[in-house]
Structures are given as C-alpha cells and as structure tokens.
Image (tube, rainbow, N blue to C red; front, top):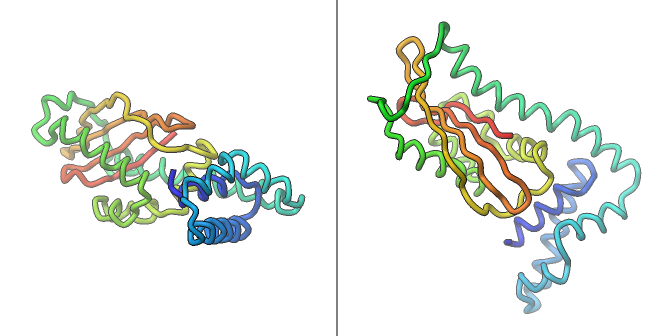
Length: 218
C-alpha cells in the first residue's frame, strides 16, 4: 500500500468532520514524509505506525465528543446523497431519457457492441475509479456524468459501502447485455470486484459510442 492510500484509508475511518479529516490527512502525510526524508523507507514507516485500523483507532481515541457528533451528522447526510445521485444518473439514461419499454437482448448478437470490448472497457473503468483518475473518467463519459465523477462524490459513495476497501485483489465474472429502447442501444455490464477488505458490485451503462452513461455501485 502506498503512503497516500494508507493515509486516505486511515482518514476515512476517523470519526470526525470534513475539516478535521483534511487537517489529519495533511498532518499524517507531513509526518510520514519527514521520516522518509530522514532516510526511513516508506514501507518501514507504515509498518511502525501499524495497520490502518490501529492507527485510526488511536486517533479516534483522542477525538472529543463534538468531533464525533460532526462525523455522525456528515455521514448521515453526505454519504447517502452521492449514492442516490449515482443511481439516479443511471436511471435517467436507461429509463427517463427514452420513454417506452426497453428490450434486453443478448450482447453476443449485437450489431453495436462487441462483448470482449465491453468487458475490457468495464475493467478499464474500474481501474480509473481505483486510480481516482476523474479527469480521464470524465473524458470517456457523457457530459451529464461530469457532476457525478468527482472525488468527493465517489469517496462518499465508497464510504457508504465500507470505510476501508484496501487494494484491488481481482476482477470476478462479468455479466453483459444490450438494452434497446426507442431505437437507441446501450451496453449494460455488471462486475463484482474483490478488494482486500470488501467486495463491490459495479454496474455500468455505455452508449453506442462506448461513453460511460451510468454508474452504480453497491
């Protein structure tokens, strides 16, 4: 685990408000970088600090009740909303933009999509999400997804699934299909990805240009 990912994982488990989390992130990065500059290997510094859970636990023990109260308020109001936004984005493109009944067809028979390409694109999308490369994600998405594909939105949605994810371990089986509605074609793909601490199911929607038009994760 890199220093940056370690620190972010710790901060996500700390029960405090957003401003305090940002302050803690900068302090942890500064402290670790200072030790590295003194000749310590980054992996040795992280090992000395302990696991993410241990480090976050020590920090939580030092926090006052007011910070914990802010955390609970933030978690309740801020975590749920981004997840709804992500789901709504997918629903909009598949259901509301095109009135009428949608037909689900075998993607193997599609004249618009190649199953192998769709599967490769799904993995690439997951890799961009894991790398927090939001600019690249926006570049390969429909314009309306730009308000969803942002660090704060995705981070909050991730926290709603689990406080820590860890490194990606493997891609599991991918399921794909084609949706046809009012003459418009969409590729739908679902994949479960196993991380060190959690398994996450992603569902992506792509338009005929293979632009990302919907994102849902649980």
